[in-house]
Image (cartoon, rainbow, N blue to C red; front, top):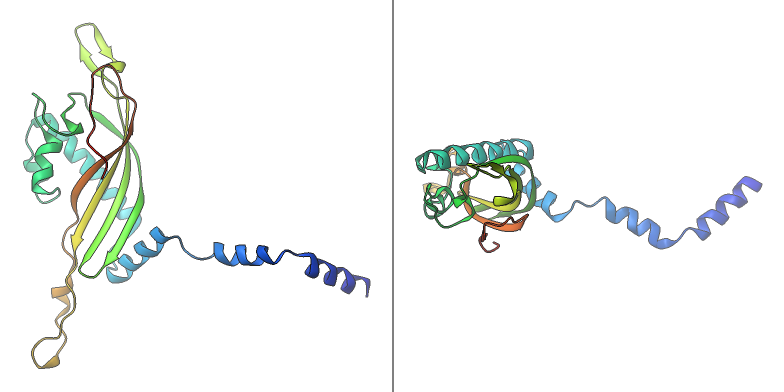
Length: 202
């Protein structure tokens, strides 16, 4: 009887907002919900695999910069953006114009959208440079030491349309297109004495 009385007291004194907060915590955040929708439409999609592809693209960009040739980025980066990111040894538009190389640190998905005919994922990328070399040795302050960028990827997703006679289109027609890096936005950077000017945010 005493135990039942305690149970009644605790049930009465429990704030009603607590139960609401707990139920609200179980709902997925908007990014997770959109990524789930992308995965439901494309069973081959996963966050881990996508971030692995981002890291691979980062390495490809570094190699392209070292060679001064954007050809390795063909089909991976929007045509107009590739030239800006790769630039040349003489410099060019975009943050990739700096002559020092960057080391990939980490990445995380910060935005996602699953729309009719279009998937979009934005990844925040952290990279670090050790500074440029000079006759006096390496100068870590001569270039940005830490860069944080938002990389926005998009791909086209064909929509299912009835074929002639009302028969559904074959599955091969619905294969999503490749992910393309379409924009790079500056989030933050540790600036040195180079007068480096990052691009505008997305």
